[in-house]
Image (cartoon, rainbow, N blue to C red; front, side, top):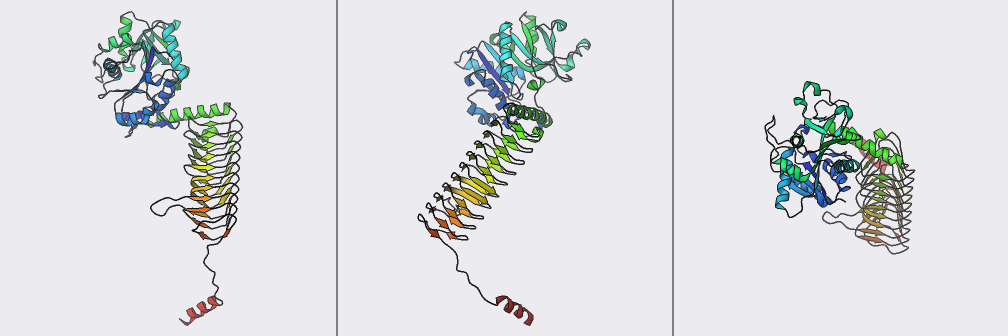
Length: 472
């Protein structure tokens, strides 16, 4: 890490064109807030303590969403443009005992596809060219609406820049300039801070523009250079929901390609929703219309069948997830079989080779190795041993209307169909629960427990009932 290199991320804007109550930088693509993507890329280049996040609109909400990353915060109470944002950084350093870094790279909090490799490239060019300002540029298919970077000698493609000119200010001979300004820069910090005080608001929006610094530095014979991004998507921001979804699609496709490059088979990747942090092992197969969300981790040789939604869960090797399963913060051991249509809620821990079947719901449950609950069960607040068979329709009653209670089931227990297990309850190893029982007391090892009402048969009851109706 370079202690003379810091990063400022502009994240103070409101994003009015989104028509949303949520701060712009907290909108999500790829399963994470825009700003978190930018911070994650920046943290691969510098330490978190050297990242300064400029916040303003809904500052407390933005701070709460990203403070776990360990970055520093600079408050821009009044949003008066990009130059004003950096003026706040300068003021923050003046009030701080922290040393001013030699170089300051400026990122946008709403440009989430920026890669750490590109940040490194900007730094390397900035240093090798001995530049005072380095501008990241790109060449889109249609540059209309973007500020253009005017090079000193465009034909020779030399790195030196003459100015950054906004679309409406382009001269006739500049209209065909294809290279756009990304809004990402690297500066010699003291040179930048010196020019910030000279900015004015003599423009259509009455704001302090950071782009004006380029012309100021050129006028002082300071070296301003440009470097092109490898991929146009890296520098695209999101000003509308439609633009945001374009970035989301690009990020998810990149994630699918990353997984496929590591040996994962994804049928119809355009139909899947895979968040950027998801990992999966080789020879795992992901069928169409699967959603893999959050920090999900999937082992090798797994099969995830269509319409399953898996969030923040960890699956071992050789796990089969049949159609339509939902998992949230669950842990699945090797060779387990789930579904179809199973619902695993948080703190569900399914053991090796265990089966969770049709329309089974679990919550805060540990199910031991080789145990089975194959049909129509609810298992909540339970610790279930290995080799247990839970019959169709059997449930744990864990809630008394005020408190939750635990059910503990030992190894090799047989729970008959349609049994009701009323917690708190312990069923010791090797026991049998007769079908249709309501069990309220602990069951000792090797016992058979029955909790049924006595069956009563009334002969000829149907005939007598029909006769009574005829009389009436």
